[in-house]
Amino acid sequence: MFRKLLLLFTVPDLRRKTLFVLGILAVSRIAAVLPVPGADPVRLKSFLAGNQFFGLLNIFSGGVLENLSIAMLGVGPYITASIIMQLITMIVPRLKEMYQEEGEAGRERFNQYSRMLAVPLALLQGYGLLVLLTRQQILPPLDFFGYASNLIIITAGTLFLMWLGELINEQGIGNGISLLILAGIVSSFPRSLQQEFFSFRAEMLPAYIGFAIVSLIVIAGVVVVSEGERAIPVSYAKRIRGTRVFGGTSTYLPLRVNQAGVIPIIFAVSIILFPGLIGSFLSGIPHPLAQQASVFLVQLFNNQWIYGSAYFFLVVAFTYFYTAVTFDPQQIADNLQKQGGFILGLRPGKPTVDYLVHILSRITVAGALFLGVIAVLPLIVQGVFPIRALTTGGTALLIVVSVIIETVKQINAQMVMREYERI
Image (cartoon, rainbow, N blue to C red; front, side, top):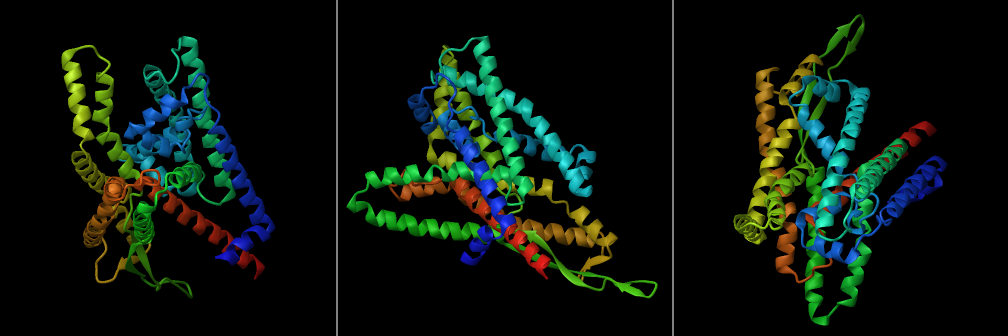
């Protein structure tokens, strides 16, 4: 490991790329601390602490919302646009062909459409956020010019972060959007450690030790499940062209245990916290019926048992849904048949499709339960250990581990490529 880190800074090309990526991350953190005019940081901190939806939005924005910076939306609109585009592929076959069958050029066009869709989403989300922050007296009252200027600024901030992410992607070291989110999550760790250091008491030492052990076990579990896959053996028939023989090899088809990543958690959070958000808006309506509905919705989802149970169920359900959207057994079977491949002991066509559906449904159970536990992990940890500042959300932990694993893989690929160039 240390040898690879040494090579990372001794090989001139890799050193240049690594320093460039670190510089881009530093620029993104500078943008995260430039606030919009007139913000009240005390009220904002209190608002985020009592609102789970915007707390999660702060995570996916890379921590820029808590500073009410010029890039307060972060990369959230782009993530939303990417999810919408992937769902649209179920309705528009042309987009599905572009994303899955046209190779790198097709995916680049697909990503370009996602970036274009992110602009109106940023305008819409920015306007809603400005209205909400104004009602909460976090921002001063704004006129038309104030709304327009702030909306242009925060939309430009989102586009700026998207551009920084594209610059990182060009270097081939990690995914740019993921690294920006990772930087925002990691940047909050020193402040949390500082809070726990100054509030440390000797009688809480067993709780700290237990928390550290549980954290290590959870991180190890995230790595194992994120890297876990079911290998299905595939053989290719021999083909003779002239005097040359092609095929006749054996390989395997990897089916990942966690096919959906963190997307089901995003979907579930959007739904489970929507009633509470409606309740917050209804509280501002001076009507007895609206006030009663507001109190009912807020109290219902403040119950940790109801909230946790509904959250877990929705994450499991959306894991199955998103896996069905992104993984098409029929297409996999058709591609194998076109390439002369077959799964050992199965005939091409419908038997292969049925087998892939059966295997996928079984391993998705493990992936869905894993994501469900990760989603409700903060509720479990807060109930067991009286440590609040260090309780990192399960979603944030999953993002950190997944991004680090993917970045290490890309760095290894860069090093392997240079080893081949020396031969």
